[in-house]
Structure formats: structure tokens, C-alpha cells
Length: 250
Image (cartoon, rainbow, N blue to C red; front, top):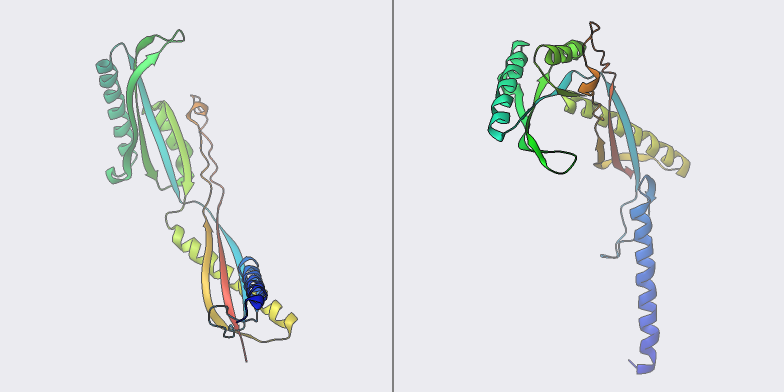
């Protein structure tokens, strides 16, 4: 090839590669509802015509599980005395939790610590120890009364609670089915607008799964009184987003 022609050829090749890159960038970043008709850069063969659509759905469920965090604290002049005092308080709290019907396998220690307690002047003012337990409570309708018992009879000095589902996969499956139906409805609308017939599903991908937030309830609001603590459980949202590739019927 004459040397004078090489720059022209290289320029044309670069232009072709740039155009191909742009085409695939459009395919990659416009996924929610897209009709594909084009050529593969790797094989120079026609891409299979299809419609890509995303769908999402949210399923709301009443929580049937409460995760309760219950802790005790102790303070003494020495680390050993603080530890012994904490052990006594923790034993009382654990006994009360088990007395409420919680199985031992559902009780765990989430945190245990012993360390110096510093005064405002920066010096050491004895030692403090703390132990945090976490257990599953399977009757959310009685969670308020349960928290009261842990504070008033179990000696808990800090509490927290979050709500969840014992079988989140069932709710996720329900949301996934609805999300796929949503994607199919979008794809059908696209096919009708384009004047083509929607074909079978080629591929399904789950893009995201969003669980529910974990509302917390602070122990400082549980002090004394004859009124039972109110902790409304409300409902929890499980959201699923999918992407479905449909063929175009011939």
C-alpha cells in the first residue's frame, strides 16, 4: 500500500471503531425499554432483534419477627468488681428473657466490653463494663409489654428493637413475580408502539433487591409508669427490580 494512503485508511478505521463504540454505549446505558436492531462488532453478524424492559414491584408485609437488643451496664472502682457486678446483672437479664419463653438458641451476645471510665478532667474514674444481648421475639403484638418487663423485672438499662420477616424470601418471590409482570407490560407497550409482535422471554436478570428499614426503639423512653409501652410494628416494604429480555416474534 502506498505510504500516502495509510493515514487515510487509519482514519477510516478509527471512525468505524468510534461509531461501533457509540452504538454499544447506547445499548448498554438505555436498558429500561429498548428495541435492539443492529450488528455485532465482534462477529460482524446481525444481533438478534429483541425488546429489553425493566420492571419493579413492592410488596408490603406486616412484620412477624422482632429483634430485641437488651443490655446491662456496671461501674466499679476496679475492673474485677465491675466485671463481677455485670455478670450478676447479665445473669438476671438472661433468666428473665428465658422466662418469657425465648429459646436459648435464639439468644446471642452482640457486645461485651470492660474499660476505664474517664472523668471530665481526663483522669480515670473507676471502670465500667457492659454486655449487650440480642434475641428473637416472635410475637410482635406483645413487644411493648416485653420491653417493659425487661426493664422493670430484668434490670435492662438499654434496649433497642427492629422488625423483620421470618421468611423474607417468600415476600421477595412475590415481589419478583410482580416485577416481571411489570416488565412484560412495558415491553408489550413498546412492541405495540413499534408495530411488532412480542416474542418469548430470552433472559431475566434481577437488578436489585431492597429490604426494609430497621426501626429502632430506645430504652430511655421506657422508664417506669403503669402504661404499657407502645411500639407499633407497621408494615415493611420489600422491593425487587428486574430486567427482562424479550424476543420479537417473526
